[in-house]
Image 1 (tube, rainbow, N blue to C red):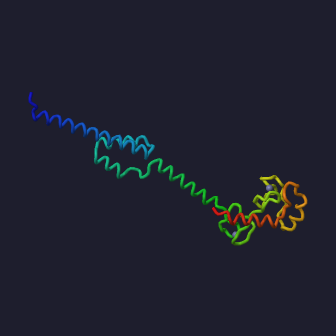
Image 2 (cartoon, rainbow, N blue to C red; image 1 turned 180 degrees about the horizontal axis):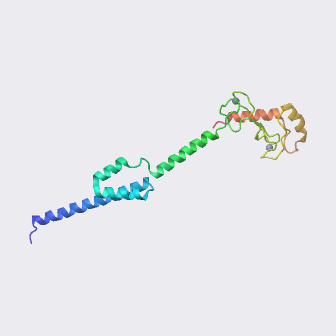
Image 3 (tube, rainbow, N blue to C red; image 1 turned 135 degrees about the vertical axis):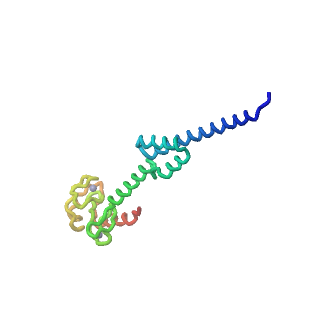
Length: 183
Ligand SMILES: [Zn+2]
Ligand SMILES: [Zn+2]
């Protein structure tokens, strides 16, 4: 039996048709999936799939030109980043007197010398000026006045296990620590 040229032509046609059909289907699936990653709107997803099914390649090109710029996960990531940035700005403490950026554990503003925090009279942790009890060691704090007054009043009351409290030395230590504490 001899193979006729018509047969070869037919097989070639079937092959081309199958390839084209597969491409057509792949375009529809791709467009549908892509739209699903960019929009939660069920109707929009179906319209895109339908448009690509009907218009084929031109439909796909139109979709690529007009599709939403960001995918949902990209938009989500961007919103997270913006939120983090905003929080960063909001949480940066500033000096109430001159508005300069200060650090959480600074006791005074380096630009205008305003007192920002006070050290705990017992453990030396940096506390808010308004706190009258240390949250770290629960020692009650009496209004922070002068170093001399503190030394005079509190040194004798220190328990034997901790070294005698010296406000001037302590302040010096704390300031040194802050200087070396670069973030
Ligand atoms: Zn200041
Ligand atoms: Zn304390």
